[in-house]
Length: 273
Image (cartoon, rainbow, N blue to C red; front, side, top):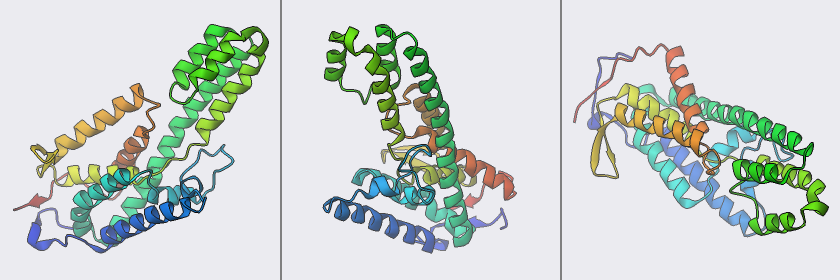
């Protein structure tokens, strides 16, 4: 593709094939999640991506997790971003190349997040092992606050602390159960692939304005840098927020690598209004 080519609204399809069908498929999966939930079948648990050590892990989840969403707003925000940034890329790249980029960045995002999870879970297991040798009450509380602050039951913990001498040996199993609970939480959403698309959009159309909250115009490349920095700091300082920040960064990283492999030379495409 010639980098000097001019692009504008009249030359673009607003709903090119890949974007349109991805939107439809994601909506179908979300509706199916609601329908099956009413019948006692948890599609999120079945098709979301589990940590490989989890008994719920299946290889096909590396693909299916991209089509599962935890809420309507989760779905809406991802699909809006897919359309907003994706339709321009598909018009430039073509459908086949766009789909390859979408699924590789989505897969890369999951691998990056699982790598971060491996480091985190290994550190937790080491902390539990060290604690098992001392059964120190303060160490128990420290582990809970550092790693399990969002999932443990304060009432049950207070009950354990009030009967510490008799239950201390059992607390090791309690911590291991909490770790297993973390491993069994599935990762869902198209966000990893969306962040890859966002990065590509920012590099290819750096000067196109992105309106934050529909009001504040920011150059696309600036928006990408700010958003990427936010995800990094959120991942480091809020690791247990329930949001896979490192999956977002992984999508960006794999998107960047893929664009280098494809020979992209960071010469912006020209866009007219």
